[in-house]
Image (cartoon, rainbow, N blue to C red):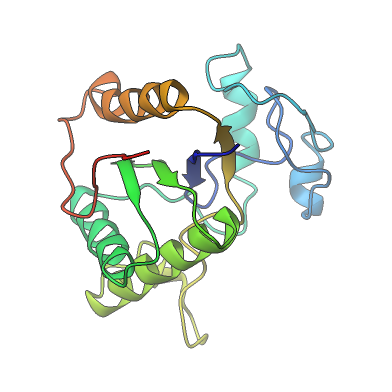
Length: 197
């Protein structure tokens, strides 16, 4: 039985559908990006982030995105966290671990009666509202004549099902250890609560 989910939310441009290490995508929606290869669909549940890849080709492909890839600042990360807190305070989501990094976010989310995809969409929506309210949306300079800036987050999410307490505890530790692995300080968020079975 699923107890929780380890979720990764990418910022716009973080993980391309034709990333040489593989992706969950089954198509590339941009002709310019397609020049760097078709979608690299994989069906594994383990992280592919540490697999070898041609970083130069990956960087060239990212330059073909419609907008520059998003990297959030510390101030933007704080706003995202406040947006998550706004959603969690409504009582429908329990977040057991969170690490907001410049290009992606790790979360451990306890299972609830709604799909994890819907939970993630709600969290991204709350974070976007906060970024806009604080006038620090990372895509604000690309807003142009649109009423709102382009998306800060990529579509969907990467998720792993956590089926027992030891899986949940291992995922929580992984998420907590992520910022120091990237040379960032540990993170403590007020909306994170202890996992209780």
